[in-house]
Length: 183
Image (cartoon, rainbow, N blue to C red):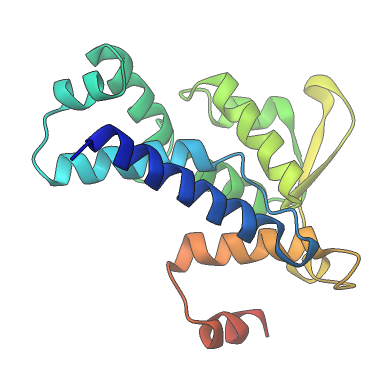
């Protein structure tokens, strides 16, 4: 059996499936986090199966130290232990009325600044937060849940973003459970 060909085929079919789901019914679901999520989930599963970090790093074509740094950066916030940086930034913004970029960067000073800025952009692109202003004076606000699905046709990306947040926080849900959460 050609393992590389099998893996390439699985990846191809999975990406086709993700693309179909992300664009179904005219939706444009946010995908910026997918590559990082796949990396973290795949490394977690490899470790669970007993594969050592040095071997995993080699499988990804990374030096051990680079692999460990990337995994640490993607897996957990240095500021808020036990939570992903994405989750920590979103929850921080959701708990406030308005937050200046400089204050977000100050709050997550122990995390990589580039990663924090990327997460802010991803959250804005997904419609989960919005921003006004420019540079360090930029102000971020969490989009209220009622605004995410106000005017269904007009805000389909917002509904998709809300669904992703629910799935991220609660895990796999049946269609009935998802409908219940959205009610």
